Image (cartoon, rainbow, N blue to C red; front, side):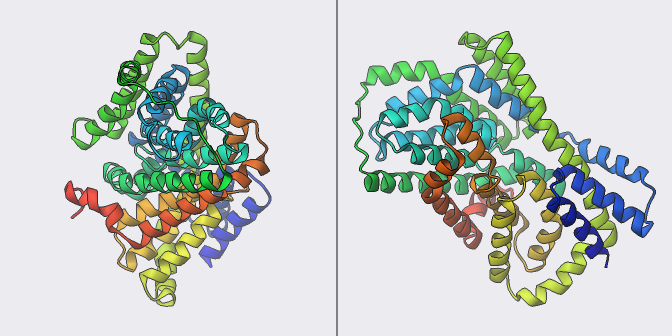
Length: 428
């Protein structure tokens, strides 16, 4: 009965089009009033406690670092170096675009920031190399999905904080899945190029040109090494790493003389706008998490559902189906905070490793960022490339299929996610 009241109210509010943060808050308030569990001051207390987390400071910091890299010319230098040094790779400019997205993802942790930062430079380059405009826009949208997968990842910071899973362990566990997604996109790009008859005129760069491009981009290439190396080496926490990313991005932007007071203010404004949305949802979802914990609803659901599912393989199938559908209808962080407390205990009861489950949960929802009708990366790609929503969706279909297949493989092959953290002693 309790579950029906809580989730029925939440679903009804979502269906009438209320913003997700208000849906979470109002459903919790209605439940407290209906059941007479606690006074309404609990709403403010739980929301404040949910936002009062040191680890969550990494979200606005990594977001700011991403915008500073875009405004400070770091993405242009990265693209120039990869374009000159990787000219020999199959798939040409499309492959270079995916590599740029992967490296930029290791600097920002944000899908939209990756699409915007790389797309503004690479989309004209793709068109100049005879790529179909729709396919080029679709490739950028799906390449941006690497942002929340390859560490550091904002959505994994949120998941780890709210579900009590080690954030550094999640970062390490997501490296191989992220690289597999990048490889799948590269292979798909090669086949798409052959099918569409794309013939690029490759310009072989000399060793001197590559060296000059490296000298211009070495600061950008050093960033992920410092950030991830520091986290895994135990030198600093993910939050401290985010602060270091901001400092290095700002210093490099000033040294390159490409960042101005105006662009700095724009970066700060966008950071506040983006991170405030995420933090408010996280804070209000703490009320929902408390209600679920106090009433024991997840345990009750798990007790009834586990015998029906039978084994973890059926659970994986059902979970992925739910996440793929919900991920394309709701914002990633909101979906995670609503669904994880309900669905994760069922998987753990079936014997699935909680770190493996955490990584698959996050990357499956990330697929929703490039899935219509509400994929955030799709809208960002529209704004960056000038293509319509329908055109971007048409172009990204083969790339979307490839990353969905990777998510399914990671779910059923735990070693892909758990191999590195186990080797580093983060999993026992």
